[in-house]
Image 1: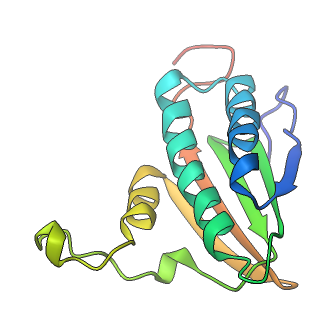
Image 2 (image 1 turned 45 degrees about the vertical axis):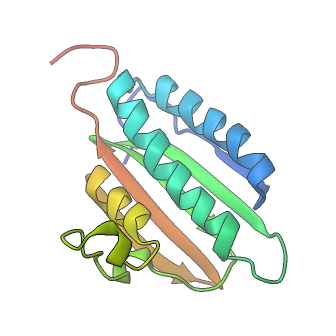
Length: 149
């Protein structure tokens, strides 16, 4: 459910190529600004989404580039971003937690990005439907849009 007076934010599609990542991030940040996120909130959104988008670009389409779709909206007390792709099924919520207590040279490469995304969001959900992965990331908006606490 949207907050009254706040328009639903639209979607953005781009080829799953690194060359499109910068434009996708710029689009996403513009939507966060339109939703009234403070700079600290925008940074959290930018870093988490960049990790997810880069992972999709690098791993979701082993046969060649596919497409990524992003939707962003201010819903209830959250700024929500849903990222969908038609790549190989992958639920990042089931990824094993990295062992951050071992020395870095003894750790298996990877997995820290997903760990970071989980830690930097307030809510995260995954679903797979009609051969598409859908990951929704949510951040609490600490103040009413256009006002103060």
